[in-house]
Image (cartoon, rainbow, N blue to C red):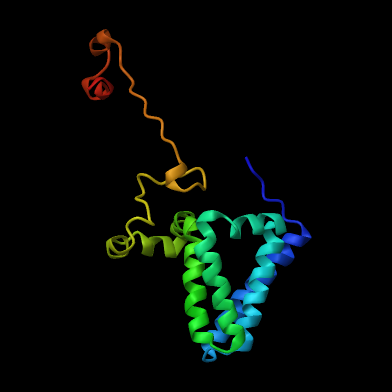
Length: 177
């Protein structure tokens, strides 16, 4: 079992990431204020790099399948800094979705386990909108926090002995059918 050790560096990184999301949200609320958006971007990137480490951050952003998202996020950040925040935020949102698309199934399982929010995501209307991100309750893992695609299920077929029908009541002999 992998443990997530929470040292001071990771605590600071999570705080910076949270402040980055908060400042980005404020920048959008205040009609795309470029100062708040730039501050949010800087805090978010520095928080992610402190949380997972600089080496892991570089490996994540430089993966071949993440190039499109990295370039889009970087160009969007550049547009925010030079004064075109609406175009910059559109590019950053696209890059964010591309970069973190591998985490959506894990996020979906996490959201389904939140008490009230999980009930909302179990409703047929919501399931019809997002069918491939939210697995059914039959395929979801109950003991581990893994996404359904990484969970393996072992099916066993139990056969009762042939002369069991002589001693057991018939309603208990469903195992043989």
